[in-house]
Image (cartoon, rainbow, N blue to C red; front, top):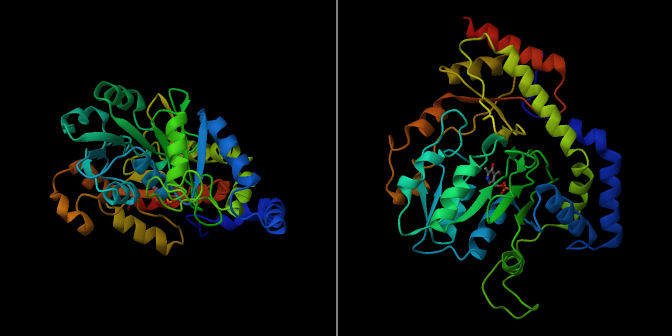
Length: 368
Ligand SMILES: Cc1ncc(COP(=O)(O)O)c(C=O)c1O
């Protein structure tokens, strides 16, 4: 039986009528920029994350970029982050003229190893940018303590982790800002690009809004250079429909993960993902580690089972970052993860027999 890595059409069919009504509402009103749908989404998600402000933006990448701009991070500044993630946070740090400083990951959680941050600090360090990878929070207790002790900003990349908690507290509520992505395959996905910035500080939130509107205050009076980083009303309307299902979808992902954990319990060749005791993951990905990853993936493909690799190459060896002076061997845990990780299907609508098929085929291949 073929099993897709991801199938968004199943989700869409279940909510088609509501999505079409929401789209029709925006088109009929022709309020395509700003308006009630954007406001509704901002206030509902701010409440869920537990912060005073949320600003809808054009993508998760722009959420990171606008956050760094609003925090006045720029040339001469260093930002501590992970070498094992998507390129967006690193690209954003470089685009404001600052320098990313990598710290290796915790091999159990794949997240930034907080115990290594202090040795990476320098007088130029201005911020920490933790990425809550695959739906699991970083050690925000430790990171917040370091940030406080050294007067650093914290920009949480929660692109993959809306709804995740650390010690019962939602991600996005720890840092100076929390940046989520609504890329279609995220836990709350738009029908295109979108993102949001969470922030508890009134002054910083106002600055973020200004940065997202070409630095204008009031309109047409530009006090700084910003950009056009707005979230579309159409996307917000669709996201409001989906938002009502997010808790249930996240619960389904957790259920799939628990099923895989149990099923792989006695398959020695498969190392299942570790969720720290103080965390509740939303499993944007369910990522196993295996030694002969590429061979396993090839054989799964032959059997019609979709998998993916997040991420095949660490950031510190990417050609675009050669100027930073890092090289192979600098972050061995991240490099090893790139060789071993394999993400299995975990989308909410995955059927029980599909999960069983994934486990059955992997166990069979692993025993070869
Ligand atoms: C960890 C991480 N950060 C940032 C982003 C960027 O988000 P977007 O694609 O919405 O720009 C993504 C995903 O795409 C991501 O996975």
